[in-house]
Image (cartoon, rainbow, N blue to C red; front, side, top):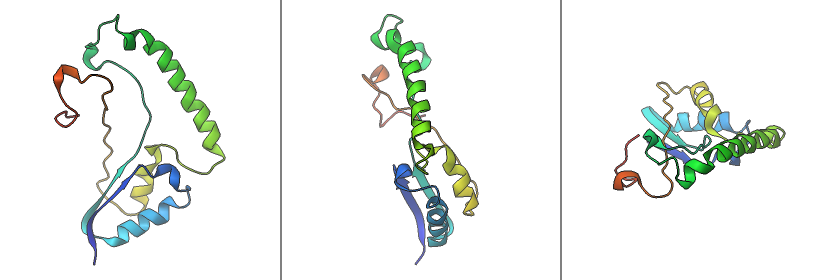
Amino acid sequence: MREASANARAIIAGLTREQWPPLMDEVYRLLRPGGWIQCTEFRGSQFYSEGNRLPKNSALMQVRPCLSVLTIQFFEILDKMVANMNIYWNGYHLEDVIKRAGFEDVQVRTFTIDVGNWRDGKSQKTRSN
């Protein structure tokens, strides 16, 4: 029996680069025509104030320049560390792997995740990206 959908979440670093194509080939084989796969993976992070809503004297805005530098340095170090480990450590490569398996209409969507107090009293459940 073929499935209508498949979901993969936070498994990016659990597979080698060579294991991804056979996995996507198998998922493609198991899905019925018109079926879809949803992959939810980490692609990086940055700290910012959406719509410049945080006051310039807020703690986050005061440390943001330092966080940005540290985040860039962290990901540069991580890139070097995993270069010899034969894994993908973020979701940037998945679009190509999924397309090569035969999937059509591949879409990449990026979501923002709030940290700290929710802006304007909105909850993550009602927030749209």
